[in-house]
Length: 124
Image (tube, rainbow, N blue to C red; front, side, top):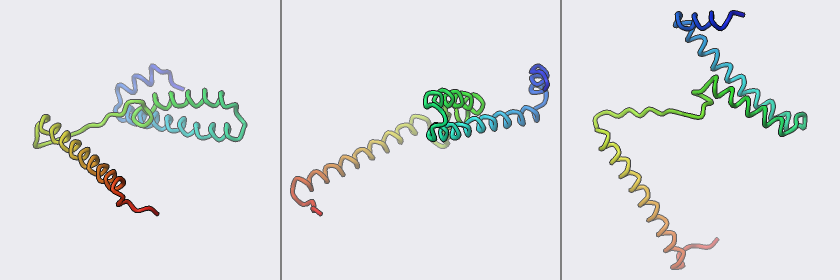
């Protein structure tokens, strides 16, 4: 097994190696995540104490999040790209859509309430 210093030097000097290493680490994160299902099955079957299972699962979740943060991490980033409009106009359009949707929902509720209070609702 090579020393960490040798691996670190190789990561810094070889882009192809760094890419393959990153993929391997993400795959390792997946392996830890898959172990969680095995532990759950053992807890359900009574082979493992539920509290011990909980501790093991928490440790595996933490490890998976560190090794594969894009997939299992707590922070998920979303990039939004827009063209042709400025930022303020885009925000106004979103606010208007939300306002219209809320208005439609209120009108639908009012229609249901009116139908119930006027006796036009059918009883099955």
